[in-house]
Image (cartoon, rainbow, N blue to C red; front, side):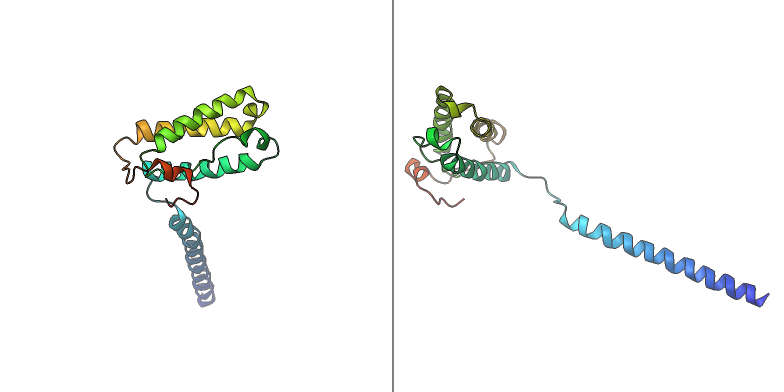
Length: 151
């Protein structure tokens, strides 16, 4: 009888240890996911800032691209600073310039269309969705013609 009790006690200890190990493993797998998950949704400001950075890089890449470089060469460089009040005018002008590229072959490439669509999205985000959330700290249109603007 005592041997059975010892075996049951060893078996129950084993089950208890296994249960604890399962919980520890579950905890170790959930904690990194919880820590890496953004708890705050992106704000209008962060969305506009990220889109502006992406568009600045996208336009620079199109200027040197194999399929698009020949017709993007005449386009002005695009530097978007969402803190500059002139950025809305700059985007509107650049959108119309990109629309004029349809007269050239590269205006129909996927990359140029993506640039145009993303520019329009940022224009809408800044002009309508984030209206009142964004604060323009400078009004210097010439600054948007220079590279290395700090965001």
